[in-house]
Image (cartoon, rainbow, N blue to C red; front, side, top):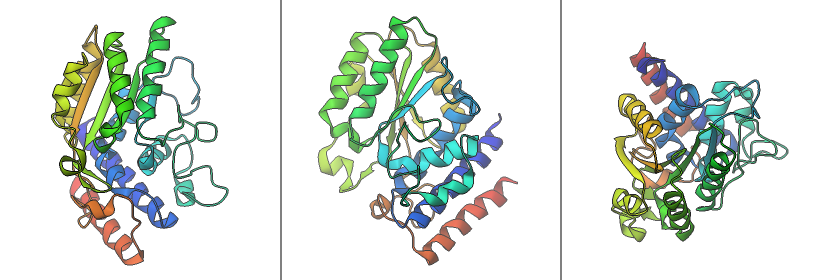
Length: 276
């Protein structure tokens, strides 16, 4: 799949995110939008998965460690064919299988329930260890928020992964610089993120999270790295694609009203037009 096709899909994913959160009148659009290009590349290009057989034994695994950005994962899964795109409007509704955090028991394509920050990477490390012990060929991917790095459990998992040389594990950090309380550098700085992962025996790659050439090269490098896990530090823009959400901490966990929804969709429609 070429970059133009990926960009078009990523914009569909962003439209699904905005539509779902608007419909729910709650949710986390900012960090979902910043990771949309990463989600798109993983599910449409990188991972060995089958929407017709979500529990395929040899599939690659993905764990959304920053589980509150479920709208991004849900929109990606829907556009990939795991369930109907129309169901995105049921986000957080009573009786819907698409609740505020991913649930592996009810959502096709979700490999691990998540939401408590720091726990997702630990589950991913366990999956990667299991693959090594069982001599399976699948790879494991997990997406963390940069604010999530303030959780000590993240570094316990990283220490273990590096020690066990889990080269079938790729950790992606969505480094958009903002968390619920403000800039991560001011709340409790995790910087330098790359040096910290290096200290835990990770191979580290820094990329622009919105450049598909860089994304493609990073995942290729991760696959080819042997004897140590890889951490991809994806430098992103919170709220990417929606003018009034970009770079704003206000949209970490807030839904657009009807007027804001119209503006957001117009922004994304403009991107569609530019990609034609």
